[in-house]
Amino acid sequence: MAIEDNPGSRTGYGEELRRRREGAKLTQEELSQRAIMSRTHIAHIEAGRRRPALDDARRLDQVLQTGGVFERFPPTPDGRKVAEHFEAAAELEGQATVIHEYACTLVPGFLQTEAYAREVLSSGFPARNDKERDRLLATRLERARILDDFDSPVVWVLLDEAALRRPIGSPGVMAEQLAHIAELGSRRRMRVHVLPYVSGYHALLEGPVKLMWFEDLPPVAYMEGLKTGKVWEIPAVVRQCQSAYDQALGDALSHRKSLNLIRSVAEEYEHARH
Image (cartoon, rainbow, N blue to C red; front, side, top):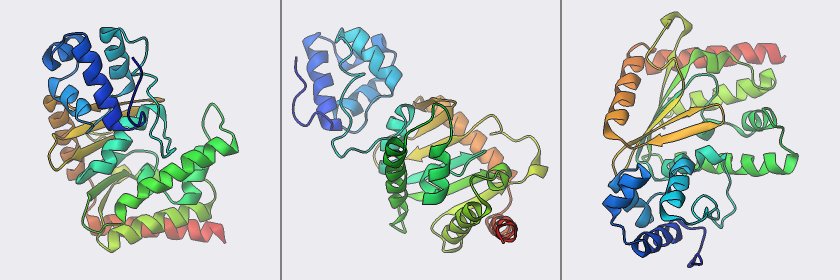
């Protein structure tokens, strides 16, 4: 069966899944049980509100015997591209009304300045050529446009002090990046809290997490590791992540003290720059 109607859209993806499911004479509940996904997630995919993570797509292909249709489904036609494991989270990020994020070693992607993001995308393994790097850079900068609206999404960012102290690129790059975060925080576009080194162990020390809420969909949690990432919709898992975030937030500096620390570290980079 050929994929129809704007193949790169979430609507096209959802319609294809519905056609394949009905062709296999399965209900949403039956498909969810066989593919180890929630029925709600299946319903959201078919309605065009979400796309599955790569592992979920592979299970859908296996259950529906599609020969890899859903794993290979074309990207959105606007040409945007992110790391494969981040695709689902990137789409949800653009729909979220509230975002709470913890970053342990790097500034979150949607807060990165162009110079900082270029340094991040120029490193790593395997190496990227300039064309690939620039394509990813354009997408990352486009993600930052969710902050253009003052009211939505509501953003809280929890930064480990390591994200401030780890030099990415030159001192000038770091000074500009930290000044950008401080400016967003000072004009009340987002709340920012820093977990200082002196806090020692905290509830989120094991890795980054992004929590997202939506107007008419249940909240999700996104957790990431080396070349991997997963969106969690299971309510118990999301609640655990929320509780861990809240506990770590209790160990962090206040918004005002965090901005003072960020500005202070930015000044240190400025001195090093000159």
